Image (cartoon, rainbow, N blue to C red; front, side, top):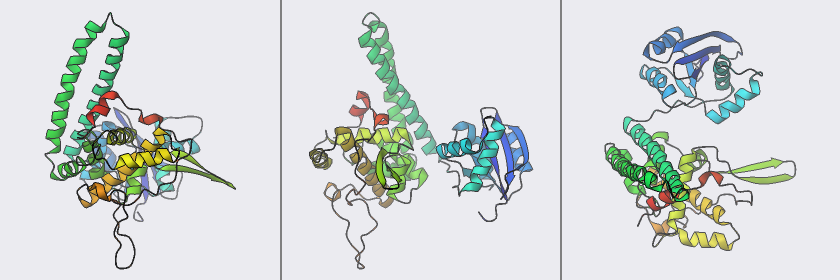
Length: 365
């Protein structure tokens, strides 16, 4: 990014883009402006901004996606500001006031404080599958909620039952659409097909994991584990060294689904994870800790399968990878033992509570 002479921070909303240009090595705004969040506004921003300036924007769904696609299509650099880190930075530099203009300036300064990666764009198929999965989550939540109300309100159950039946019918249609859409992109379908062979990975978890792996292109399994927040946080100060449980700084929905898959492995025949669970429990791990450790192992396994396009082999799950002539283990985490840091009693898995409906869906015979 040596050729970049400055950054334009963009705070997005449904109707507007609030932009602030800050030159490199400066903390003062060179110009500010508010533009409409549509093609005409996008063009005005590009015309006002020199080509050697990078745009910095937080991922806010469709509100930010329009400008990102427009700018990327004409070869302009767009950087993504990770929301949680950007929020912490903005809180550290802002005054008591919080406005869109202040936020946009803060995003430009945030980009100058560290190296940011280009904003990743999903293919049309991956975007469609992700949206269908989000819609499916909403339907399953509605089924769970209405089911509980139907039991708690017996006088209203006859009125709720038709609504439940209708939502369940829509859920089946979405599942068919997810499978149909996934098949239209060969790479995505290839990854899904490989993942479906893993114990516990069913028709919902497989496409959810595959879309992230295909679109994000994680270089190492540790990056994928950190992305979904299953990595272990560490606190160290002076002589004190402790662990904080999982960080939960990532994709909460994917973390939940992998937790579901880890639970499902215990109910499938010939699952190699059953012995791991017994070993973890025998060593004193609590149930949630053991399941979370298994979920992290599943995440690494999924990364390896997608990266190397290897078939699932239960016999290799907990064996060391073969060594090369130099004596160094090959870069293949498929069969590598999980050497993650041990969990403490502070392990918090509150964000991975699951519904009965999801548990049933993810059992892979």
